[in-house]
Length: 479
Image (tube, rainbow, N blue to C red):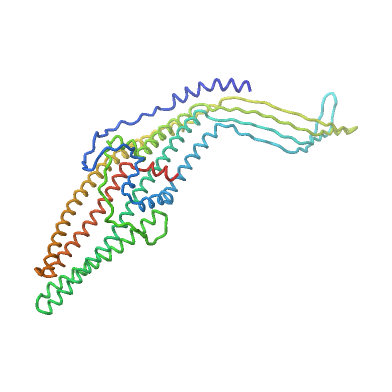
């Protein structure tokens, strides 16, 4: 034990020197991060909450939306897979940590043997029979301290990467569930609007046919109305098909079988004009889990160079052997037989360093250096992609906000015109077909407004997702 302690005292400085020499210091890559976004958005505003903890979907004041997001975070299979990957990474880290512990070999059994022996000056003893039980302990510690140290650091970075991978999946699920929820409500509304348009066209067609029979309309206008009605019937069929698809998409994200999604909320009740957190690019990059995951992978790749280089350093071997046995020995002499009971103990220890250098180590170092370069390129790509994603999302959301404002203005103008014609019709100043024609124009524009609003909401969801909003709140609430 004394020798083992002395050897440990000698090895500890070697560990520090070796790890310092063979472990390249990690330097965070310097990237050209812009000071502001290229796109502008009129809804941008500073917030006091940290974006990862901002439950932005609650701003819609929709309990049903809150429930489906909670269900998605609880049941989505992609999150389950991400959790399993995290557990696997944690298991790898534990494996490396357990390598620091010596392992024991325990022997035990029963011996029954014989051998021909002769001793001077006793002479020839004849056959010696050995019979008895024994046991032995062999604690063994054989490890490359430098390799295990760097492997543990690398495994720790891999765990961090797996954690951020899970958070990335949570962020994606929040956006996907919210988008599918809005799309489902929008399709319900579109089915209603296409049905209303189809009915209004049918009524106008019937009136035109009646007028044609009286010679008050021409057949061409009737055929045109029938053609429009048939086109709307096809659009209505597609809207119903899309409704089934959106319902299945939402149920898929919740890990449910295909089926109907019953909703008590109305699409018209959703307010798409939400305040957008005006965070700077550097703040967004610091909070996005995919960027943090890419940097963790870069750190792990950097440590991989150390793992390969550590094979150039010696490994430590510490062994201790202890055995104890008891039994009888029978000396089968030519004259007489003698049986002697006996017991014995044996123990020894050894401590030494084993320094073996394989030329293939240098190839592995080159390989891991190349892996680091790949991880560095991936990190730069992820950061640049995140910046472009946010800037594009800001521009898209701003564009749909402006289009929605214009569409709502146009819809209000048609509504005012329709109200005026209805008032004139009640006074007998205009025919009903003109009122019905204005109503059809309003139906068509209302469908466009619904589609624009859905795109506006999807762009809002995409913007919050690109900003990295809400995944920590989701992680805390679901744990």
